[in-house]
Amino acid sequence: MDRRADRQAERRVSVEAVNAMVAELFPGARDRCAELGPDWALARRDVDAADIRPGGYISGPVQFGLADATLWFLSFAALGRIEPMAVTSELSIRYLRPAQGPVLRARARLGSIGRRQLIGTATVWVDDERQPTAVAQGTYVFPAEAVFPAESGA
Image 1 (cartoon, rainbow, N blue to C red):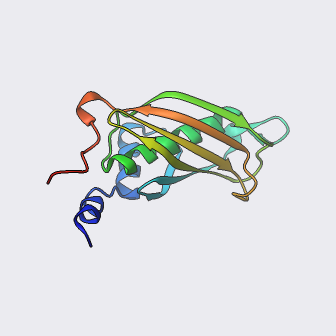
Image 2: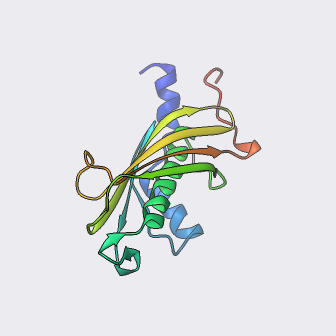
């Protein structure tokens, strides 16, 4: 393993650590991190009656919230540490089809990351990732003290 790969491995954030932070700081939150990679995150939400609109569809705000949470989880993986004050600067969503099902999922992928911000895209789905219900793009900013670690140096 080369030196860059060593640093990347040291900066890996675990799903368990993310979910523990969410449970501690946001005890009512129902969105959970399911998987993390260096440039992607997967989240899920078990749907209940409060999430359903008339007609049996999962509401748009619930889908929006899961897309936001997934991109937030992505920011931790990309930074290499949990930074609760990484905040949404901009988020837009396009709803593609009705969402119906017991579990809502979202996968966020890194578009770019700089010293103070991250841009990513989240795809939301219910049964089949190839049939998304919504696609979102967002920008997240990091607090000044959370500057992205430099790739050079020790």
